[in-house]
Image (cartoon, rainbow, N blue to C red; front, side, top):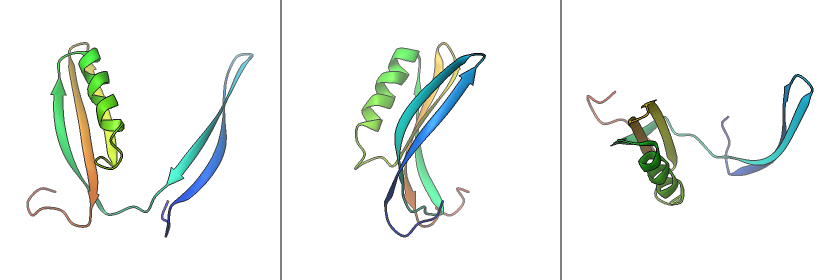
Length: 93
Protein backbone atom coordinates (compact mmCIF):
# COMPACT_ATOMS: atom_id res chain seq x y z
CA UNK A 1 0.00 0.00 0.00
CA UNK A 2 1.37 3.40 -0.93
CA UNK A 3 0.81 6.32 1.40
CA UNK A 4 2.03 9.84 1.95
CA UNK A 5 2.50 9.63 5.70
CA UNK A 6 2.33 7.14 8.51
CA UNK A 7 -1.21 5.92 9.01
CA UNK A 8 -2.51 3.64 11.74
CA UNK A 9 -5.30 1.15 11.22
CA UNK A 10 -7.01 -1.20 13.64
CA UNK A 11 -8.00 -4.60 12.34
CA UNK A 12 -9.69 -7.68 13.71
CA UNK A 13 -8.51 -10.98 12.22
CA UNK A 14 -10.69 -14.08 12.33
CA UNK A 15 -9.33 -17.61 12.11
CA UNK A 16 -11.53 -20.68 12.33
CA UNK A 17 -10.94 -24.43 12.36
CA UNK A 18 -13.97 -26.66 12.68
CA UNK A 19 -15.93 -25.07 15.53
CA UNK A 20 -13.15 -22.98 17.05
CA UNK A 21 -13.14 -19.24 16.43
CA UNK A 22 -10.08 -17.25 17.43
CA UNK A 23 -10.24 -13.48 17.44
CA UNK A 24 -7.18 -11.27 17.60
CA UNK A 25 -7.14 -7.50 17.53
CA UNK A 26 -4.02 -5.93 16.09
CA UNK A 27 -2.83 -2.47 15.19
CA UNK A 28 -1.26 -2.10 11.75
CA UNK A 29 1.13 0.68 10.83
CA UNK A 30 1.48 1.37 7.11
CA UNK A 31 4.55 3.30 6.04
CA UNK A 32 5.57 4.73 2.70
CA UNK A 33 7.50 2.27 0.60
CA UNK A 34 10.69 2.80 -1.31
CA UNK A 35 11.78 0.75 -4.30
CA UNK A 36 14.56 -1.29 -2.67
CA UNK A 37 15.54 -2.91 0.62
CA UNK A 38 19.24 -3.28 1.37
CA UNK A 39 19.65 -6.52 3.32
CA UNK A 40 22.32 -7.99 5.54
CA UNK A 41 22.24 -11.77 6.00
CA UNK A 42 23.22 -13.47 9.27
CA UNK A 43 23.45 -17.28 9.30
CA UNK A 44 22.61 -19.05 12.56
CA UNK A 45 23.10 -22.63 13.71
CA UNK A 46 20.12 -23.16 16.00
CA UNK A 47 16.54 -22.08 16.60
CA UNK A 48 17.52 -20.46 19.91
CA UNK A 49 20.24 -18.39 18.22
CA UNK A 50 17.81 -17.33 15.46
CA UNK A 51 15.11 -16.32 17.94
CA UNK A 52 17.61 -14.29 19.97
CA UNK A 53 18.95 -12.55 16.86
CA UNK A 54 15.43 -11.81 15.55
CA UNK A 55 14.42 -10.37 18.92
CA UNK A 56 17.50 -8.18 19.12
CA UNK A 57 17.00 -6.88 15.56
CA UNK A 58 13.25 -6.30 16.01
CA UNK A 59 13.86 -4.30 19.19
CA UNK A 60 15.90 -1.73 17.24
CA UNK A 61 13.23 -0.08 15.04
CA UNK A 62 15.38 3.03 14.52
CA UNK A 63 18.14 0.88 13.01
CA UNK A 64 16.13 -1.84 11.22
CA UNK A 65 13.09 -1.31 9.02
CA UNK A 66 12.93 -4.93 7.89
CA UNK A 67 13.55 -8.09 9.95
CA UNK A 68 12.85 -11.62 8.77
CA UNK A 69 14.14 -15.12 9.38
CA UNK A 70 13.96 -18.36 7.43
CA UNK A 71 14.57 -21.72 9.09
CA UNK A 72 15.85 -24.30 6.60
CA UNK A 73 16.35 -27.11 9.12
CA UNK A 74 16.75 -27.55 12.88
CA UNK A 75 20.30 -26.19 12.68
CA UNK A 76 20.27 -23.95 9.59
CA UNK A 77 18.66 -20.53 9.59
CA UNK A 78 19.28 -17.11 8.11
CA UNK A 79 18.18 -13.84 9.67
CA UNK A 80 17.75 -10.93 7.26
CA UNK A 81 17.94 -7.35 8.52
CA UNK A 82 17.49 -4.39 6.22
CA UNK A 83 16.50 -0.85 5.48
CA UNK A 84 14.71 0.78 2.58
CA UNK A 85 16.90 2.64 0.06
CA UNK A 86 16.03 4.74 -2.96
CA UNK A 87 18.36 2.99 -5.41
CA UNK A 88 20.17 -0.31 -5.79
CA UNK A 89 23.91 -0.66 -5.75
CA UNK A 90 25.20 -1.27 -9.30
CA UNK A 91 25.47 -4.96 -10.13
CA UNK A 92 23.56 -6.12 -7.04
CA UNK A 93 20.06 -6.52 -8.43
